[in-house]
Image 1 (cartoon, rainbow, N blue to C red):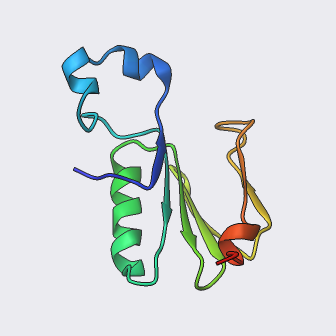
Image 2 (cartoon, helix red, strand yellow):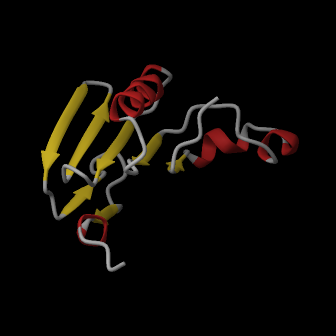
Length: 109
């Protein structure tokens, strides 16, 4: 069982779950997952986690690495690494979702 920092599941897949299944960690792999590495996280463990999501059907995954200002994008076709992107977009999979990274790269606290 895994729990990403953020996830999205197609509504049609959620509708197939029972009320009881919806009250717990849902018993399916999300379609889209986001993990944000904290300083105490092992990047190798996070990459293993992302590979597991992909192997179990996740169609898109973002591993955000603030320490190196990188975003690893996981798709069924492979992994792409972006360095210091200002935004990431989930198009074409989820065309209207973007994430601005300025506050992750340069937090105000």
